[in-house]
Image (cartoon, rainbow, N blue to C red):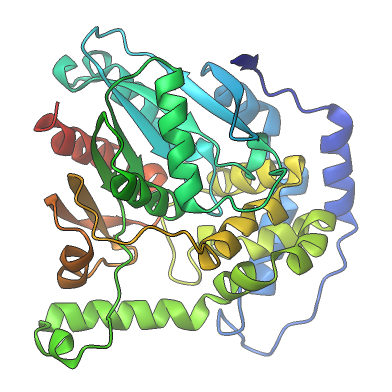
Length: 371
């Protein structure tokens, strides 16, 4: 375990601004909106703010307010935040970010989770909070070998929690972190009390009888899924040719910004500020990990040792209105111990940043019965 502090050299920030100022912009189709991808005007406006006004040092200082460490697990460097609760009976909890997010997704939740007494909550709901960066992402740096699928990440998190001295713990994740959370449930290591996720990515199997039993609401959720699939070119490329993509993203900050369109809402909006979006994009840029982060998609698509379900660990789901809407009949087919299912009419794919108070309370509720 090695203490870690973010300290980006000034010349790296100067280089970023110079590159943004020299961006070679593409043209755009007339009246394009979001039909072809993220609109030119949208990226230019964010890039201009990024290069002239965005204050990385302020966000760096905020992130450095949390104790950070690195350790080596299974041949990979793992960067993580570790905030111990002042409450002696706190439950250890590992929080896993998604793509194109980072460990910084959880900055507004760490305090309330670790010290509810100081944030108007019940001290009985306290957690010791661990927030790792997935191998290949940001300060965990590029992975040094192949095979870092969500399954392998889940096994590494179990090692990390035990290395920290925790014999029992819970897990939460969204997006890629939800895949890691479910893989933890499939591994079901001794001491895992339950896993809480923002999505259960369970899809139709092709059985006509399965479709016949769906409600109107279920069918509407399938339509949301189809709409997302129409736009999710990033998933197809990262699952097949992540290295080809890496050259452009590592060389062009404007390209990195545009590629991360999921965090901008993909034309449907979300509750994130420009600073929240740019903090994640800046973390990818400064660490040159766009390509290695994308490899998680490839590894999951080519994981010959992927565990077969169903997941029998206690599982909780928080479904937010602006997100992928998990389809309950399919989710229950693949996860047979769903003990908590909550739906919210606000918030979206990045709920930890959009509605941190709502997500914090949902995590507390889920684990309250499992402590």
